[in-house]
Image (cartoon, rainbow, N blue to C red; front, side, top):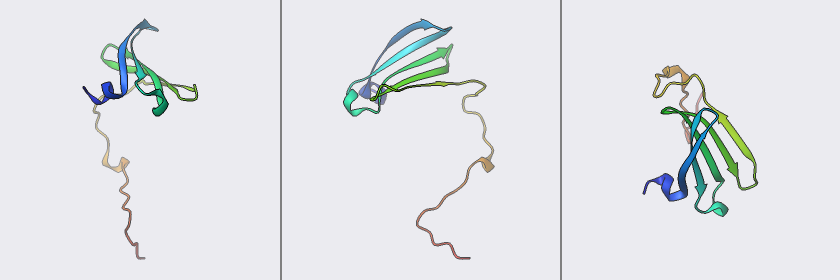
Length: 88
């Protein structure tokens, strides 16, 4: 099984809010930061994620105006080198 299947029971979550949902339940909720999650897809695109943690807190993330594997300018990233002495 894949990594997702190792940690979660994956099942169909039905239709709702114009999305197709996939439900995830942690196999070991006492050892998992995320005890359950629902992934909402609009076609093949992930549109929404809803997480619940061990304390019962709920977090919802909505995605919009994104592109899969889009190009990013190199200047967007900063190189950080640890364990180097900087002399100036």
